[in-house]
Image (tube, rainbow, N blue to C red; front, side):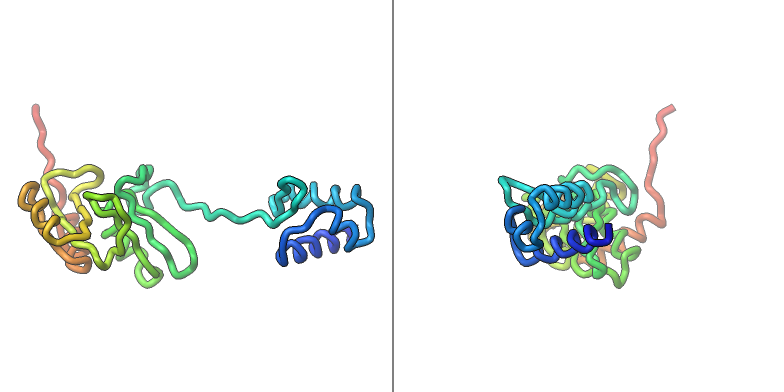
Length: 190
């Protein structure tokens, strides 16, 4: 049993150096192909390696990014999402720029980079390079609304039609918190 564990550990080390075939591994260890296939089966079961067309390689670990907003916990659909790249190597998302602006304070010093999506093109842009329209009369996700734009002129045209203030990042964060503290207007029809 101990010998099998040591061999499996060494197989992983060899695969870090590059792809191998079962035959190469059997030859390296001086064991039968059947013995190597048992090791391979166990390592595949553990999710550590993958086999394709007779070639063995380490299985790539795919990073799992949460599918719900870290602020409001809505499911993220990808049209307005904001991605935070954190210093600890993790990625988290918000559903929209409103929650993205809110998350700047909650994530604090752990933020390495943030990607917003331009409202017009949906292209990702650095959050520090955006212009934000905060408090427009329309809200496709969370309220009070916030929209990110790469171009200040486009943001001003949008604000002219739908209201709101055009602000750079730091001022947009302060404005969204100010609007949140005031509450959102709700109309009742009785």
